[in-house]
Length: 418
Image 1 (cartoon, rainbow, N blue to C red):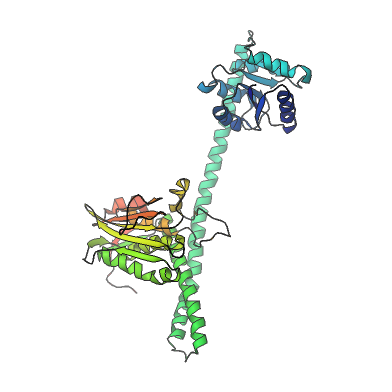
Image 2: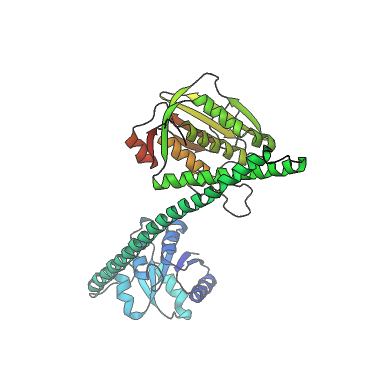
């Protein structure tokens, strides 16, 4: 029994060939396109390849030329299914023989057996001319494809530009009405507009919690928009890395308690002096911690540990969640990417937090790395979910270096904020 790879766009022809060869005791692997056939040829290790001349994407002659150049198919017969007029052309590009269309069902299996036994057809004197003509057609085909790809790339670049503009406009449109909403909620909760009943206060507290969540998402959207358009500004001033870390923990303390997540912390009480933008660093750390809290199941653990290296501070955050698949490790830090992007996903969020954290820390001479499962203990805990390492330099990089990596600009802290 032989394994035959059949590359043909017509499903009826594929079924006919499979029926005839199966009756002769052969196994058939089939596909409907040239590119898929090339991939299967390298993985399925066929004993013979049947190529129809009219397959899409790459035609049968281009597919044959590509297959003949594969070392794994050395010695494997390639048989073209084509019209009589294209027989010499098929041989010229590397086929070992051809079968005329429509196939003769009575002789088909025996013809395949001949090629499996070593039969090969010879090219005549017209083959060199046809090979040159076919090579020219292949070049013209590739030239058209290059033109199409260049046009498609130009359209994609235009779509990216439009997306950036849309993102920026939508972010500002969302942020503008949020300001009075937050302000009036504060007035109501402080009873500056009149006393509240217990039920009214409970309702307003729920509204405030949802509003804060929306405001955080809008702020992140604004930040990512600023990063992508190169309009993010970094203010440089002294700060305490340990204090920034603990402020981030306190911001998420309620969420950890609400989710029944245990938090183990190993952060020195000493002041760890650095220079940079502590406000954006705080938000970056909050995003990393929030990501750990989001994916840790009730009763699980999040561990946090700060460390000091040669010229940098680092923060390790590990969780006992389900972890990240290897193919998603890099992509989870791309803007808007989520390992589960469906509307019914268990975990919320817009997929912006880790992207923001990575870009902010890169602008401060550091970065964010994700490992799953964790490859070290954190705060004495060896957890089985995901480990995030965030680090920043003690001193800011030069302005040009910062701008090159983040698209933002560095500036001294303003003396006053209006």
